[in-house]
Image (cartoon, rainbow, N blue to C red; front, top):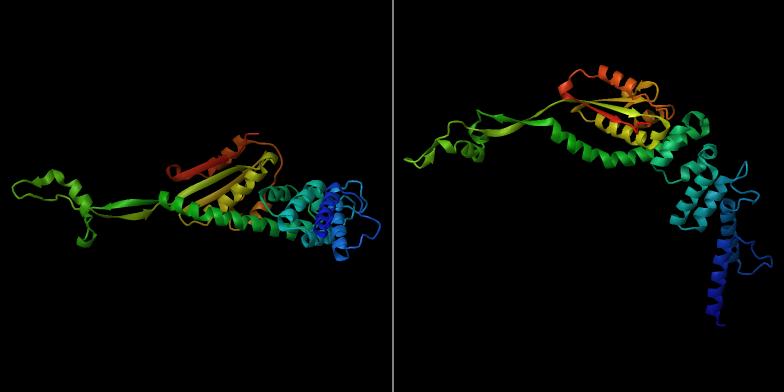
Length: 302
């Protein structure tokens, strides 16, 4: 067997050992740093995936910081993200709350934010700041995606054209003026004598009231995250007056927290039942201009 073939075989055996989780060889194995690296990779995998292993992540006091450092050292970034997510699933979000270093390392997403919010009142102080940073990262990412589209949509719906019937010469819309005055065509002169000059329309801003009524019962966790960020973006637009009402079996008006979406999210309570009638009754009191008010109910009806 050639040297190259022996190297390939050894590499395959090492990979299979990592997959199967067998104990590392006890003969010292040679290989120097490479053997030590393979053993470190094996230990990092075992801490996460070997349920019966002493010192694993399932222990009461796992060495989370060392494990995170090891997986970043020995595995590529896509594998690291998978292992971090598996650690979250294995330990459960409640246990993660006591390990801010793991919480900070996990790739943040809406599902993680929803889990954090559902346990925010049980969260120890040492973890809360880390949790807020995770939430802020997701909020900023979603806001960057939503804001331009919302601003454009709102601008188009709240600015109404106003036709100018007494335009200055430079403001005359000649195309529209000719079309509107074709009936005044004078055959003898082979020309149109316009009865009404039409100017380029100016645009007038029309203020709208928006009321978002959001179900914050336990089954609505991810929707509450999206709706709260959506409401915060709307509140930043001067053309809108935005209110946010969250409800379960009770009703909470969170409109005064719209300027800080992170604090807004931590002000929600993801639990309880659903009393839509009570929520709509409260929202009805907020309607002062029915013709210029849009109310949106967000609920799974459970």
